Image (cartoon, rainbow, N blue to C red; front, side, top):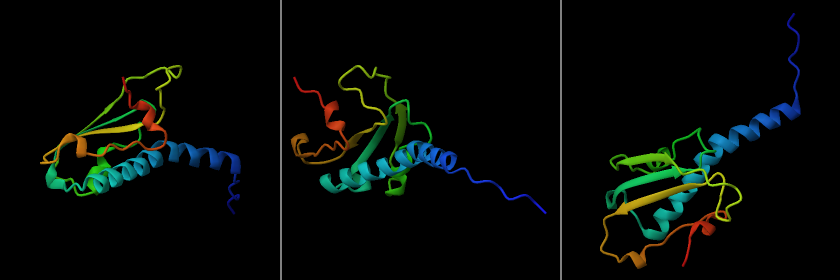
Length: 128
């Protein structure tokens, strides 16, 4: 008879948190970012010329562009990359950050487009 496998709650929680902070965080956060951008700017996939996604170096388990594909952007050229590693001492340093630059065909002026900053990311918006 096989010996029952021991269950280590602390180890299981640590592994679950680690998995979410990598794959789950990137996937759920990018989905949320896409939902809000699409809604606020009334975007259709055919409006989007291309999108460039970047993440901070601490996010490596998922390509953010996968979220765009889930939203029907199958024909949109997408690219992913990493942001530079800004030291934590910089006041605009933000860990686990996902950014997207959209190039969109529209008749609206750029002032009519709505930018999205979630979970403290507004500190990335530098004003003179």
